[in-house]
Image (cartoon, rainbow, N blue to C red; front, top):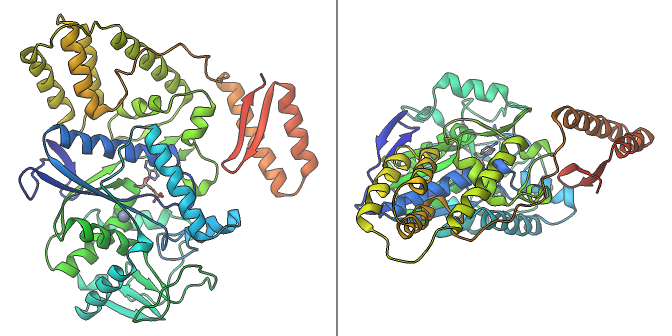
Length: 471
Ligand code: AMP
Ligand code: ZN
């Protein structure tokens, strides 16, 4: 397969270290809130990649961490632990929050036909491994203690910015909000391996370590969890593009300093899902989830098809208009497959021709939309229904669109309104949120009433204010 590698910035032929086997690591979710459909775009495309590698005959072992400690609100090692923020928001313990949102994550994944990785490991399970790696980094002179924290010393590396240029990385830090300088750092790019002096005394989860009671930094967890299950040489590492810097850059720095050799050969990054206002993010507080799509009447699998129809290395803008088109296309596709006559034997020689075409498409840097085109072509082709059905099921091992699950009834149209009204509703919701923030509840209620007069019902949820058309 040809795969774009962020490390070499080229499309390369994928060659694993051990013939026929692939070690694949995926950065898992930070479980302080629901995953938004942007996060899930990354996990859908990584799932297709894993399934395509299996389709090509590789024996894949996939490992994912669950970030339940150490991921601060700012990637520059300042701010609050996101988990603590979630716990405070919901008046629960960090572990309760972690359990609730880990379950919610896997339930969303199941709805999107995302296979659970072979190993799923929460960071809080691996404290001993983190302490061991940090100890070795200190012994080798790659780490130092300052102000009670342990830092990685990026000046010890010949090359630190291996995944992105220095300038790109600087720009990325520059645009991030709440970047504060940590005066303990010897170099601007240094990062925390172990915190003992957090600005937040109420950090709930803390462990004993040779450097005092504290908790691990976010980056160390992925290096350790990957090595624990996949060894010191890794074939493939995945994540969304925001992970390139600093997270993956730091993972490479500490892993290669620890082992003394190259760690991971291929880096796969999925571009972001955006909405009209830009990148979707959990910290915005108001975001799109799988349950919200379901509430609006969409089968979550339609969102999977929405993602598969565009290339993972391009930004993708979410819109209900496109979702509606995909929902119609999906229904027609399922019904076409359901109408195939399953009787008779598939012609495997003919099937092989289409399997080759499918591999040429998807095997070319995971071009899933071309893969779907091959699917449409074969449904139109002059071959037997049995062969068609055989191929549909075969391709669905990679696409996972439930294509042979029977016909789909035409459902009631999703709740849509014209674009002008939608913009008006969104503006009013924003205005109402401002009013609520300013404790002007009379104004907030007046806005609610104004919308209701137009047949729009508002519902305040943990995911923000949702609207629906009055039934
Ligand atoms: P998090 O739970 O914030 O650690 O993120 C989980 C995964 O989602 C990471 O691989 C991120 O890079 C990825 N991600 C975050 N935002 C987006 C987005 N808007 N579109 C696609 N992937 C994203
Ligand atoms: Zn990671």
